[in-house]
Length: 82
Image (tube, rainbow, N blue to C red; front, side, top):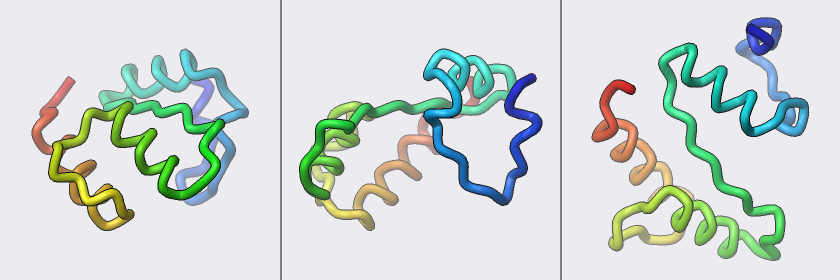
C-alpha cells in the first residue's frame, strides 16, 4: 500500500495523493475517511462551516475548534466499525 511509506510522526500534504487514493487506503486499513473541500474558504469561520456541512455535524455545533473536536469525536464514536 502506498501510504505505508509515510511515517506516522510527520505531516504531509494530502495533495501528495488523490482523494480516491486516500479513501482506498483508509478503507483498507479499517479507518474512517472524512473529506471536506474548503479550498475556497476565506476565513476560519468559513472553514469551520464547510467542515460542519461536509460532515453533517449536529445542529448544536458551536462553530469553534473545541466544538468541532467534540463533534468529530462523537461522530467517530457513533460511527462504529466500517
